[in-house]
Image (cartoon, rainbow, N blue to C red; front, top):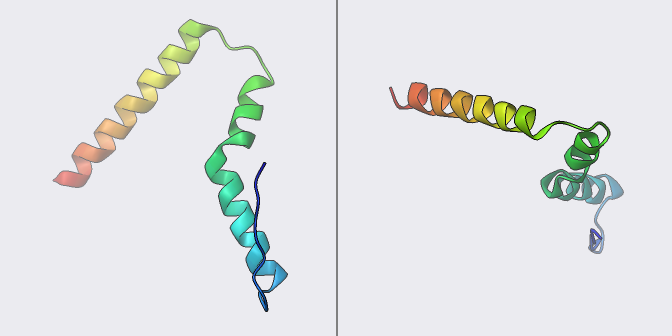
Length: 64
């Protein structure tokens, strides 16, 4: 469970923004969307490899 302590004289908008940021970092929504449909392990591995290759390409491009 995500707990956000609202400080004294802190606006609700600021507290809500901190909550959203914490919620995004936990990855709950991403996992929920991933579980809506069954994905074969071979397809999962393929997607993971494609993502890793993309990150590696971006990292290599960044260093030039």
